[in-house]
Image (tube, rainbow, N blue to C red; front, side, top):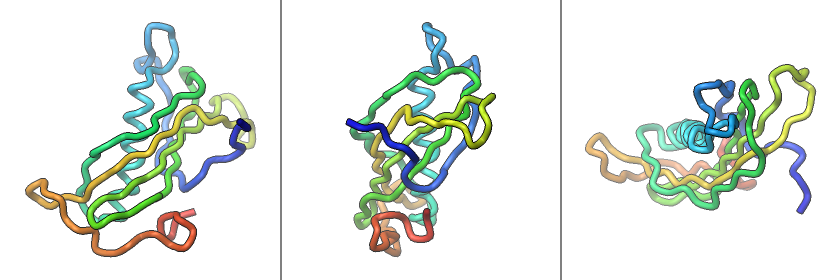
Length: 143
């Protein structure tokens, strides 16, 4: 299996891994990475739904490399599927060591498919008003 060369989708979130986010081995805790993925994916889902969404499933979660303190963590995402009220969004996490030039190497460390449902003010599912998928399977207006 060949390693991907660049992220798929649009940049959703960018942050730095900090010492408070480490596990007992000194690497960044996988739960923190997953929470960043959910934050990034929910931003895209909110834009598509034009309102509140909730996370209902995380599928095919994979961690491929450890993340170190100081790494720049970037979440990229794209809409894979849209139903009446649901959206399936692929989220990938790529990192770049902070002391490497912007054009330096990046590598993929995690990926998953997040399923979000648009909800109304009472927390009940509501229809997403317009399909966001274009002919390429990415969100309209996305990269």
